[in-house]
Length: 288
Image 1 (tube, rainbow, N blue to C red):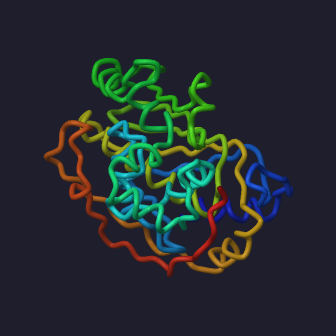
Image 2: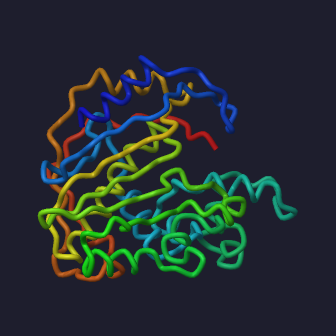
């Protein structure tokens, strides 16, 4: 994962301090691109342990078209909790609950979850119901029937609904490309939390590419990751430097159940990561 370490170093070397929506502050650069050959191994960061369970469940949640965190918290995936909690804190029903108490209510109270676990029309909604269009179904059909198309695109950025989302999409535009029976994917990410978010994003969209390749009977090509505002939060600088001091391990291998032939039939148990060596996890606060 030299590509990711090079990105961290690039921001440390070139980043300009900017204020931001969260009040935390970032060191930011604009415009950067990484490329990963998916035949070289699964691009999961090895200079810190990455929470693969969260990546897989979030991706399956997107593909379901789900926009409520209950599925995630029921599977002990807590990466989206802060945003609905902040909304809940502004409601008439808030009685001083902590984040942990809020999550427990989401798990145990279906009515509460239906109201306060909802994020609005975020990724899953846009993927499966963008103004009535199921973009995933349409994409699979087009790849199978018209692989030379230059319109193999999924957009999560819907201007008509951005203001209704708890968090507008950061990874917002995806294009697929088929040549020599290989499927490649390019993601445009308008805003990238390089320490916490980007390792998730690399693995998630690489895995999505692998899943689509399998159901379309294609080989693997590249995952290309293109950024707009790519930044390190001001309270992630030391964590980034720690990663840069570590020697990366060889990439692991992701095995996918070959029996699955429909993109919507994948389950968590269909994925097995082999030979993943990593340095210990590094804690950092998420900016909300």
